[in-house]
Image 1 (cartoon, rainbow, N blue to C red):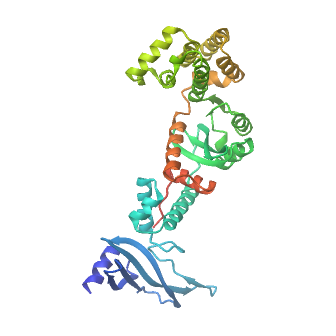
Image 2 (cartoon, rainbow, N blue to C red; image 1 turned 90 degrees about the horizontal axis):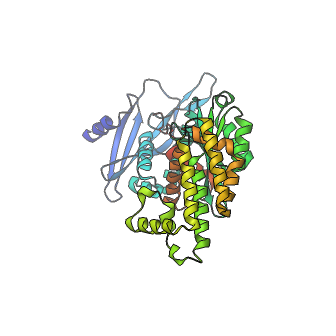
Length: 393
């Protein structure tokens, strides 16, 4: 009796339920806890015995067993009572589900979580999907004034997903399969209600036409801001193209890629020495590097007029350099000049989206890829959607 009273105290399922028996299985390393209904209202009958996985008791797995009472409603229907320790159709308790969610958040790995919780991968995966679905249903319609939209590779063969995020709150709002205009339009319309869409003031993105078209269609009042990090990335790729072309006639440019592409403050001593040697030799690649640095400096301006004047000066200076690789990028920038000027004068960028992108990449690497978009989306939202994931009980 002392054992039953002890587990009654630990479980605390209310006055309607008490522990009738506790069976230990040292060989199977489990504890079976049997409950009986003792409520004031008499049931019509009892459902067959059901079992629920509960939190471990020390190193032993714990299982709760009970016959749920069934009652007749006013219209004559027989209704099975929902237990206070679990949702209606679940085979584990709410406390066990909360422990799995906490462990998943700590490990970001479903296999490790299953091993730590002594359950199957399928149980962990089901809990993660249910928690994500529950969190998305609970998400409130808050005002979002700034958005970021970015792409993330999903599978080999140029398969992508589109990630819509809140750069201020630092959370993923939703994910769509593909990166076409239609996919982006549906993503924005699904995530934001008409009233919320009218409150969006700006949206940060790269120069992908589908993103621009979707923003213009669904958020016509929002200012399009082309992300600084993507813009710098285009120029960095151009620098590397020039280096690869020039290394054929200048072997000393071998192994100089990171010396040219890394930020100056992050260079090692060896990389700094190589960088200085390249600049002193006045190669085309050093001129291309200077073009990028001049463009980076343009973001220090505050007003639209200043930004436009400096961009035009940078554009014509770049054309005078006569380097095809950077000229191609400069012309592309000129075609999107308004979004670039907005980036120069706005504090909004995709920095938070890029950090989320890096976390998503780590998530994908930890899971060694995802077979379906559904699983990938749920994992992203579970870990980075800032959702209320816990069951109510």
